Structures are given as structure tokens and as C-alpha cells.
Length: 354
Image (cartoon, rainbow, N blue to C red; front, side, top):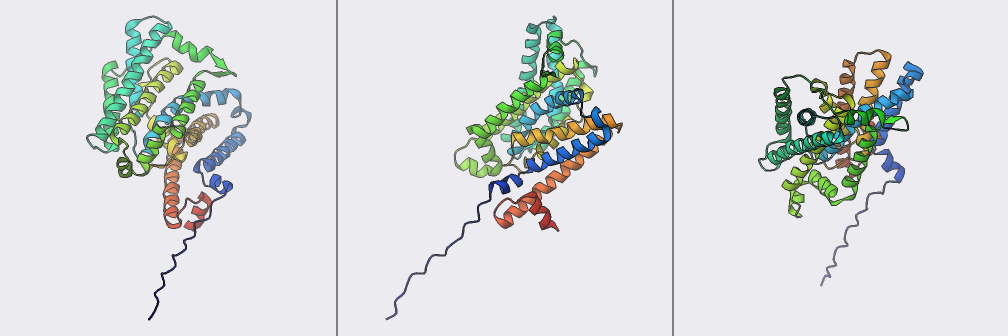
């Protein structure tokens, strides 16, 4: 009589735990920081002290302030595997609404400015919530919804103003950027810094942020565990619209006008910054820190090209090229992770491709 012995369970070895240095090396934002430092070094050699001057970095910080605010909302959107192409047009529309309100009320004090700020925020949130509703409830792809909103919001702004910029911005708002300085830098970058810090805490330390990652990683799984995906998507796009409304206020304070024709590259710069900074266009991965690093790429390129006398049109070429490269790297990392079971560093991705 034979005795049947139970088979011994197979021993599955856990993948080796990656060291802290390895995890840091695998962060795209760290590599992008290295690229940024190389760009700064190149412009420093080409332009010398003119590029490294305090006035130049003050200008860069002001240029990046509006993009940083927009980038916070865009980071949330892209982590959900969505996209918001309308953010620049919503900024323009919100600035027109704010300017019209302030023009109708009259006066140069903060009471007038406060009404305009409220109008910009409400119009931005309304556009974002409408985008989110159409995406979540009507199931229209984010690309189509926000592409349509891009055209409609910009068109309505031009209809309201006749295509002519409104310059009746209260002095209280423009003086805030001109005369209030911290460490020699105008106040707007510090307003953006506060928004970035709050956005980082909300994304990385709250349930709202965890739900955002969960939806981007696996929307069906998020629904099965009880997350109200539709409601959350509406809130995320409303947040993006709110950031566009606040960005409109900052732009009015900086330029003293609605700059209707001056936001043509805003969508590209913000989306490029978020993706270049390591937020995956496929969703489920990203950070506010990476977005901030990515924001400096177009801002530094813009300032550097102006100083060395290169046509500003080359900025779009450079930013677009870096954006394509960043998406390629993201795809390569994901493919390598599926094969190996973990996220490799960018260096290992390039070695695999050879």
C-alpha cells in the first residue's frame, strides 16, 4: 500500500527590496532635476552673470507663479489618467469675468479687487465642474471635453471683450505684486508657493489624494471598494478650474490686463511640466514636487533664450521635445516594470533599450 505524501508548497522568493538610493535614482523627478541643472549651467556659460542675476531669477519666479498654481490642479487631473486642455482658456475667461466685475464696480481698493477675485474663482470652478460632470456622468473622454472647453471658453472671452484686453485692474491688485516683496522677490511667487504646499499636503497626506491615486491606478477597482469615482472626478476637475481662476487673478496682478492672446502656450507648458516632472500620463503616479521641478524647465528655457538672443519660438520646440522624451521614458519604465515586477531606474531603462 503506497502512502501519498502531500506536495511541499512551492517557495516563492520575494523580489529583493530596493535600497533607498535605488528608489531615489528611479524617481523621474530626480533625473529631471539633473537635466534642469544642466540647462542652468549651459545658459550660465552662454550668458554669464546676466543669466545668474537676481533680476533674472526674480523674473523666472514671477513667470512660474501662474504655471505653478495651474500645475497643482493639472497634477491631480493627470494622476486620475485624465487631461485638461482647457486650463489656459479657462484662465483667460476667468480673468475677463474678474476684469468686467471690477470695471463695473469701479474703484482701486481691495473691496473692488475682492469682488473680482471671487468672480474669477467662481467662474473657474464652474468650468471645471462642468468638465468633470461631462467626463464622469456623460462618459465623454476628457480629451474631447476639455478640447471643446478650450475653444468655447476662449471664444466667449473674446465675445465678451470684442477681442480687446481689459486694462481696468484696481491698483490694489497690481500694487500687491509691484510693491510687496519678500527677499527682493515680488509676492506672487510666494502665493504660488503656498498653493503648492497645500496641494502637496492634499495629494500626499489626505484621503482625497489617496482616492486620486486609486482612481488613476485602477478605476474599476476603486469603484469596487466603495469610492465614489464620479463625484471624485467632478471634484478633481473643479479643483483644476479653481486653480485656473486663481491663476487668472495672479496674471491680472502681474500684467494689469487680461492678456487674452498671451496664453497660447500655457496649456503646453503646464501639461509638459507635470509630465516631465514624473506624473504618468497613464495615471496613478505623480507628485507635486516633480511638477515644481518640471515647471522650471520651460521657465528657464524662456528666460535663457531671451538673454542669449534666440527667438522665443524655439521655446515651444524645446519644451515639446522634452515632453515627448518624458512620455517615452514613462512608457519604457512601465514596460520594464511589467517584465521585472518593479519600477527600474531610468538608467536601467536606457540599458534595456540598447
